[in-house]
Amino acid sequence: MWAGACKRVHDMAAHVDTSFARRIGRLQRTHRRMARGASTYMRKDGLLVMRPRRSYRLVRMLKTAAMVIAGGIAFKAFLVASLGPSTYQTRLALLENGTVAESYAARIMAIDPATQWLADQANSLRDKRL
Image 1 (cartoon, rainbow, N blue to C red):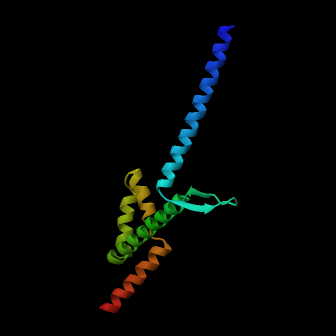
Image 2: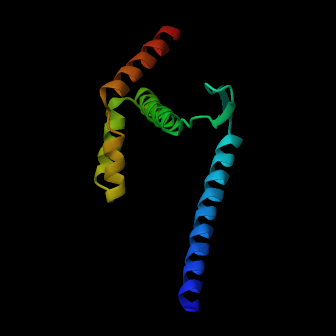
């Protein structure tokens, strides 16, 4: 009799401990999120409630990726404008015959329409100044 009662009490205490631990974890996570910013709103009953601000990680990540791609295209355009298309293509051909990493780099560094357009714009600006 006592063994069964002790087991039930122990199971109930374990359930309360895990439930309490989950609540504490949820409160800590909310607190960390609110440390990055919170917004306040009033519920229908007049109670002011604070909620963590939304995280815009995906938007930030997409903006960063777009900036990296734009920077890469601008770098390629600078190289094409300064070296000339024929010299640039010759150096790419050397890269294509290298290791696997070099061949992938050659594919990435190939002249695309955006790179060619930017290089043409840079060359026309340079010709106007001279």
